Length: 106
Image 1 (cartoon, helix red, strand yellow):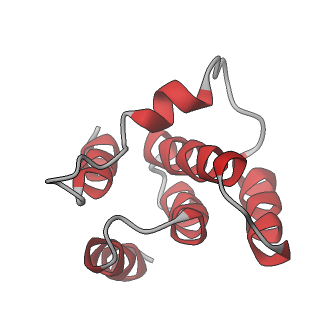
Image 2: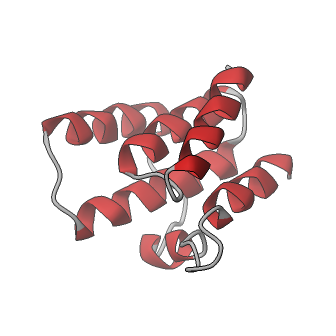
């Protein structure tokens, strides 16, 4: 599972930080590794992206699967605020990856 997370991070770096597909999968992988905070951050980021971009049935299924695994959030008052902490700056597209790695290390 750790190798999968590492590979997904590399893929996201190559694609300017990834998208909700990546983030839902990453949230589930981080959760299974015991990195609950990182999982929640990636899940929240994916949900915010979905709310602001067109999606399809596959992304909706990924969201449902991730939600079932993570369970209800504890005292998340504003997903967009939490997820905005991971938004890449124009000059630093890998910021979301670095933030999640730091959250996983906590």
